[in-house]
Length: 134
Image 1: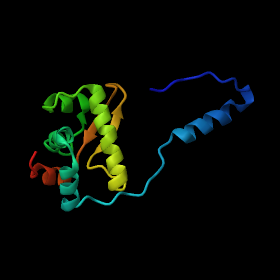
Image 2 (image 1 turned 60 degrees about the vertical axis):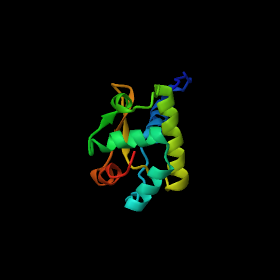
Image 3 (image 1 turned 90 degrees about the vertical axis):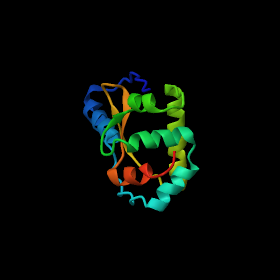
């Protein structure tokens, strides 16, 4: 959650402050991540617990489609609350950062209107994960 504060700024500095804020808010370009191999995906799958596997399986069933968090949670058999889902994704993100160079087998974006993340799994990853046992 973002907290907003009021900061007194002299009127002649407002354009400079606004420019600075906009520059800080722009996404930084990053180097493209290397594609996942089938072996890496199998290792990721094996190292994941049941809730993460259910999440990945649900996402792989809809390749190349943006899927809202709420829809994914409905098909997961693990009774996962919103807070538990967020915690699971945070832990999964740390594992990806520590063991897979920051790569995740999906893309995600924030839906401002729905106030939830949406996830998309590329079809080449979905095909490999769909063949693995849940």
